[in-house]
Length: 340
Image (cartoon, rainbow, N blue to C red; front, side):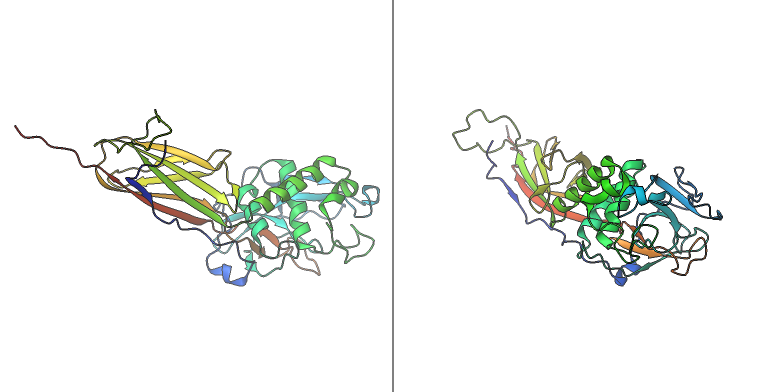
């Protein structure tokens, strides 16, 4: 059915591309806090190199893997590829991914704070912001391990002498070397897929609406649609794109004027979702749709769980989500009245 001449879309509001990680985020960034209770999938860290275990040191989803940039055979002992737990100034827990290998993971007993860190292989922070927002709290070990690798790839941080022949050589110089460095083809495949997904989703996110009064099958596609009848319903089609890429699996809330409760829909593989508003409708009907979108990533740094000359590792996390909003109106015919 062609769009009715009685319906028209108002320009949708869009969100800007994710900016770079900056100190200005400290005032607003929540980085997906998980509350004051340690997540159930976290466990006390036990060392892999025979060093003393310490309290208040927790790892979460991920895998212990052998790893060396010169090849897995050179790995001296396993490394934790995955999430670390840390707390913020409010005492809430977060999950982070290390972006500074030559240091020690943070203790949960002292708060971590946002800091500035550049990401040479993601200078705008758009890819990291998306991945942390969409997948950062995963409980899947392989996904968490792949995110660990991607975070180090974006950061290009130094490996140290346990993981490279030269201490300052990047821990993950390229994603296509992960299989050789770890002996795990699945880790490389998943990391490459996550980076490709992030690249596809790094464009400007936009939410738009299309309204169709009298949403019934078009019986004569070659002819203009007739005017909607008084009391007709309304079909609301929502489209969510990241640049030109459809965004699937995202919940959208739809508010319709004169209705108390919002309608909820989830975008499909084409980035679209449709909800139907039952009639009767009359006069100007205003529809507002909202959806979350990734915010800038945040990097935290705290106190090392065990003394280390390099201090605590930096932890990459999700930032506060942005809210996308789109608004459109449609003019529904007023009911006709008859007199006798």
